[in-house]
Image (cartoon, rainbow, N blue to C red; front, top):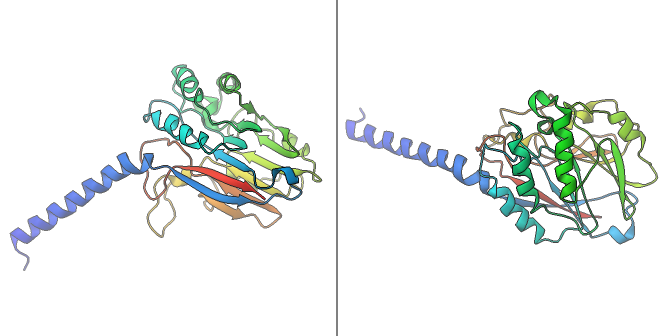
Length: 278
């Protein structure tokens, strides 16, 4: 029979372990940035771009939910890598009101920019309340423009022969993927930016083959070891984080997010992805 002393000791150890795990999940991992390095093979890539770096930043969620000095500090670390191209794949704010525009200006004064070009797409949080405020999205595009970032809204831009197509957000008021993909030249070197990976399962791609860079999921933010994350804001529960072969000539990469909707992470560190173009 277990003694009272043994029971109290075990209870104390369990309580201490739970407290440490909680502190780690709240105060450590949400600010433990990981630079994930991967090759990004693109068919027809101009030789000038071979070996260049393309850096993906996603879901910074500037607002009142966590100390966004972490985002500024992370931007400084990323800028030190001197990337050639930088893409931001949506959710710049956690919108509560006009205050977020001031906060975003403060953060984007330190924005990571590419030597050859810097581009962005919008996420659902960039459309304000219930993702239906187009005026909020326009204001955020203006802030990004002030910081020297070109927002792609169902359009394509070219950088030294690499064509980047940006699809506006699935849940926002300007979602028009057919218009975006219709502009893709299959003979060119292409890359698509699309915040919500659920769009990959829609019949809107006009035969596109190549890589799609997404965000939105945050990798679930909390993931039990050896199990899928219990909470994901997507219909296709396969789309967690990392690389996926869509088995039709398209490849998908989902960034785990730099910021967080709430200040809690476990087994899903914040990420900036550093791609080498090949």
